[in-house]
Every structure is written in C-alpha cells, then in structure tokens.
Image 1: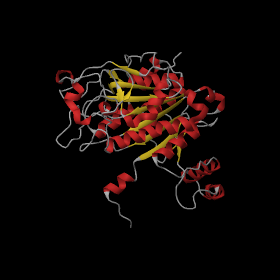
Image 2: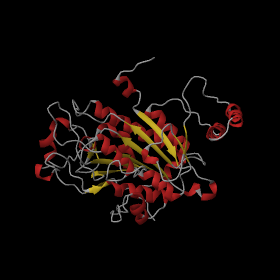
Image 3: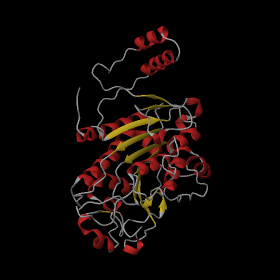
Image 4: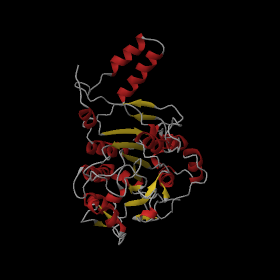
Length: 381
C-alpha cells in the first residue's frame, strides 16, 4: 500500500476543474454566455492583491505587507506587480476589481466560509445546492458535468450526470464496446450505469495535464467549442498564509502569480468565446489588516474580487471604501465589507445567462432585497 504525507496529499490536490451547462442546441445554447468561477481557497488577502495606496492608514497598519512597486489602477488603488497580465486586461477594458466586498459571512471558519461561498446561502451547511447550479437550472442549462466529484457550487435541484476522463495508463483510448457488452449482460441499476458509460465514451474528452494553467487552457478550449459547456469552476488552494506572507515574495504572491497566469491562459484559449464570457474569483474571506506575530495574516472578513471577460463594460474599479483606521475595521481587525458579493455574482449571472436580477435574487440567492450591482460594470440589457 502506498502512503502519503499530509503535505504530499495537499500538493497533489492544489487545483481541479469541473464543467457544466451543456444543453440541446434547440434551447438556443449558442446565444447564452459563459461563466467561469475561480475559487481561491484559503482566504485571499485583498489588501495585498489590490492595495489602497491612497489610504495613508494602509502603511501604518501593515507596512511590511505592502508592495513597494504596485501597478497603477488609479490614484487610490494599485495592483500587486505579479498581476501584470490582469493589469493589461484592465487597461483594455476587459477586467475589473470589486474591493471591500464579501458574501456577508463573518465567522472566519474555512469549512463554513467555503460552504457559504459555494451555496450562496448565509446559513452554513443548510443547502445541498450551489448558487451556480441553481442559476444553471433557471437558465435551462443543467444537463451534465465533467467532474469526478461535482463541486457543491455546481449542484442544482435537477439531476446532473457526471463524467471525468481518467488520467491513468492505457486510459486515453477507452473502448465503448466493453461497457456496451456489460450493459447487455447486467440488469437494473448496474445495466443503466454501463449504458450511460457507453454513451460518455462516445463523447470522450481527452485531458491529461492537471496543473492549474493546463486546466485553464482546457477550460477555455472546451467552452470555445460550439457545443461546449457554459460554466466551469477552477479550484486553486494555498491562500491561507498565517506566517511569512511577505510583500514581494512568499506563498501568497506565488498564488497571485498563478492567478495572473490563469487569466492570461483563459483569454488565449477562449478565443471567440471570450466576448461572451465572464470570469469571476471567489474566496471565503479576506485576511486581517495587521500582520500577526509570524509576519503572516489570519482569517479576516472583506477581500477583493477579480472579474474579466468580454461581458464587462470597461469600468476598472468598484468600491465603497470603508477606510483602514481601527474604528473603521470590522471588530477593529478586518477590512469591512461594504458591497455584498452576491450582488456581483448576480450581475455575472444576469449578464451571461440573461436572467432577471429579481429572479436571481429570489431563486438563486434567496434574498429578494439583494441590491443590483451598478450597470457600469457589466454589459446588461
């Protein structure tokens, strides 16, 4: 039996990719836009990624964690230098940042926070479906999913069949005749399973490299196909930097560099589909404003959200900045959230799938009074 250390296991599970949202052409699938969600697990430090350089309290509160060479957004906000490709997209009017934002969850638990960000339900572990899955349901796009284990984010109220191509030796050219024969020699549920498997083999998708950049390229390539999926979820971990976070180097900024490469790879691989795609990041919470005793940061509240794609209107920045004085912070330690990130996600759904904000607020996020994000961010009808 082969044994793995916890570190080896984590290194082997740093990223994953899932697709959903195939639908019959008769439903007008070609007219529907696409949503790609990048999950940044661990809690991304929004103040490090998008430093509010115009707020003098930034340097007083966390000088050791602020980059000395931020990329320019405007006179108040900058970008960490590792996000240079994202910065280029901003200059082209194809990327934006929403700052001081989060889904209104304040308990700072990874398990609860990740559940809330995937379900969109403010009560942790009270929902078996995800906000993207419910949106796909409402748009009539919840047919099947490419995933070993369908992410909670994509689970809807309608049954979704899943398929995941193996990455094992001799598995690149599966023989559908084997599953067809097995379906004929068995009865009941087992026969049904082999029948479905035979159909999946006939539409097999080859995917071997599973590092984050390769997954992003694969996601863009599949979505760009005429009969491709309408939604994808990329999962990236290791944003939980409790020690030695650093300003210019360190694990957190290696992850920002990785995030930057994902935006670049998606832009290149999406091709013509870029014009009708919205890419949005999602993280369970931000980090503390001040560094801890180990020169890292702990679980916080508000963070920053990144958006990219052709469904954006050209606005670079959206924020109702709360300030960084101790009296302005949530519980005098965290950046205060002033924008409900569910409004941002609602705008993504409205822009890509054409659903009304009121329907999304009620059926997807269970919040009838959810504010509508300003039209200046998305291309909305």
